[in-house]
Length: 340
Image (cartoon, rainbow, N blue to C red):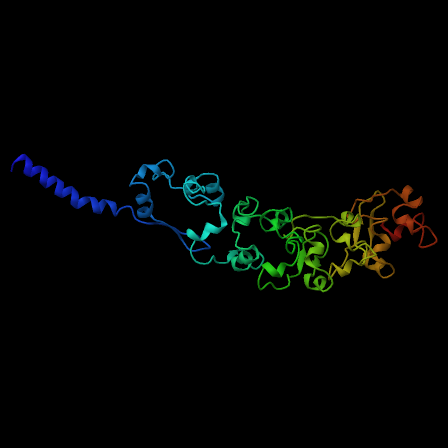
């Protein structure tokens, strides 16, 4: 075979393999969680740029390090946004052009919640409300750029809270059932307390008089046990004491059994030089209420209001009542309190 024949054979071989190589530049499908996939056509773009792959590879798209870009990043010139600026090609920042890449209808976004029903964001409701302006959300870093935000963060304008602020739309600090579909009234919350019966808070009872926003999140974070308050804190208007102040509702300083069901205060004992002294809650509750002593005289903690006999004789501690008028005097009948 002569040189001319070999050259012709090589040309025929190349002619056969080139179409097969071109077919390697197939369409690229980018799958999206809550919408139909976006399809990039190599054939269309190669025809525009005279089959010059280097315009995009590896300047814009690195085949060794494949990265997903957000619309926010594209608007800043990353990925497709390098060309789709409104000059070389239609802009990624033009709401009217979204449908050229995003076909079909976006699906509802479901957020899985621990301890509550799923929250659902409905594109089909919001898109018409915004006049089809997708960028209202997708170009706002406080909305789409905020991942796994808390309800407290939403109240400060993050995520859904950017619009749901009671001005543009209903507030995120209430109206729970509008986002958390199928939400049943929250269960009774039990607070474990050392040395006394558990305290119980009934959501069902309170929702008969108040809205979620009346308590959350100004008084309580949306998480049981997120913050612990003492009875002394409540007396100062913290936690339950914001309402249970004796005016809006019964005071947190009394009626203990209303919050602590099954309450049976213990018999208290103190070791003294005159033998063990004791205080019988059961005996005193037959004549008085918790609020008569707590917390004006005694704090809700054993040992927190210690007093000497001299101080009691002067009217402190037990001496407030045991003065010889309201009850026997602390100066007399020592055996009534001391096991001598």
